[in-house]
Image (cartoon, rainbow, N blue to C red):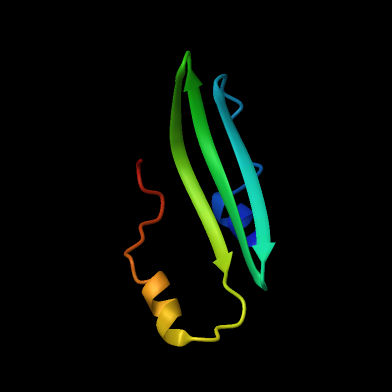
Length: 80
């Protein structure tokens, strides 16, 4: 969770009306994940402004399956 919060710069969130941030974390079978999200609300519209995720997969038992799961391209701070 610290890795995601540090990368997200948690604590520097905007105090601007209609903006907010949240963090969620979980673990299973030795793996851990944390995600921070920054959003903006305007009436009924919700805009996702930024998402930062940190993932620690735990022990790798089968390297070929790990490569298949994490082979897609990623982009930091992409606009959704």
